[in-house]
Image 1 (cartoon, rainbow, N blue to C red):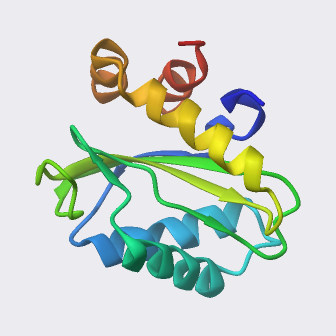
Image 2: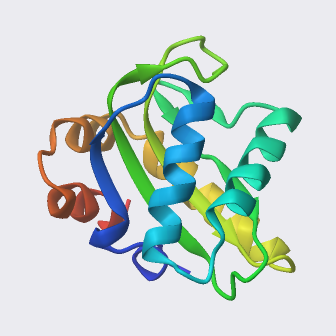
Image 3: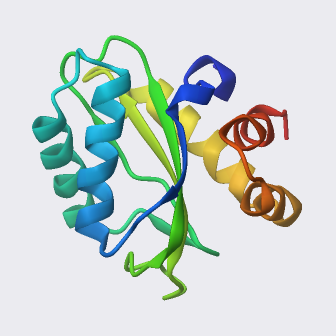
Length: 150
């Protein structure tokens, strides 16, 4: 499965205010639920928080990949948020996070979940791709940078 199959330009958000890790996750849950009405924003927020308690999804270099299994999620769903300014996300490099790719998968999507996480991590491991996304100034240009094959 390719990233273009799980994300669309309507689920790319830029210049989102941060504040704190918890606030970013709460905001993201609301934004995603607006685009995917089958998902409950409160349940989604609880699942994302529970996952973060297991260990931070902050990869370093300003990137985090919050992810969880979600009930009422029939297919993998991706969303991307570029923050106005970075927030502490307990990342491995202790740097603030300013770009987050959210991945939601059905309860039983084990292999698909791992495969997509790997693709997303590979995408953000590329210095020029991170730079391209950080300097993009529209949801469409961010989306294009996200889904262009690595």
